[in-house]
Length: 370
View (cartoon, helix red, strand yellow):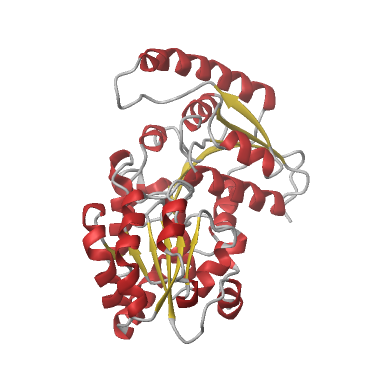
């Protein structure tokens, strides 16, 4: 165990699960390596980190910071003032806490903290979860001492000499899904004699994907497929109606799946959006997948995440505009093609980073000066 005296770490950023959950995993990995470490999170007020981080057992300070809205609104007039306030507060937080290292995970709060730390001569590390770098991290690249990434080819965004290919942290319960297929099948009341498709549109759901599933339920069940369908809370009443009486065929709809480890374990094929967390989980478990990138994200980064796999034959892509008409047939073409499934599993092994949180923690600790 690494034992510097009174090691202090700030982890800054958040805004989405793709930033928050990897940040918590990195904190847990550092805590496991360093006796008595003090870890402080800094996030944006009103964002999900303000609930998720305390729930994980860490203290967090919120900055009054936000980004520009894409639509015309008076709130955009406040953005420069919020940024100036956050920069001043970040400078004071760094001075008071006196961290040995600052880790930025992307999102609004990451920028002011990493900049403030760099100006005060404190080692800084940023972590980029996506295959297409976010704006905050691109701006911070010159200030940061080291950069941890999840995809090859990231030197097109960042200085090559600063890069470490570590992968994205994945929750331990997900990593432990391997070898639990029978437990997963029993948990969801599924037959071991039929193949299982897991369909996930995110915690809030994805309307286009949900509509596509509803349209193709009959086709999929007629071909002896079982379906675990996470709908999100908004679409769940419609999904309940659509799956009424289909439980005997192995079809179940869920507003949210608490035991994603068992859902992954039971599945032979995953249909998912292409957010950083989802893609990292699919890669870590080496699951054949059909990725349907959300068109409603900044810089279309989900399509770029998906293409990082598609380009090495490690996944199949359906564009959101085509999902309603294509989903059923694409599932059937893939799930019964054993040769193609085998090749996808072989290819995705190149993208599987099961120890990413420890890798990032190791890079961070190697930067501590004392």
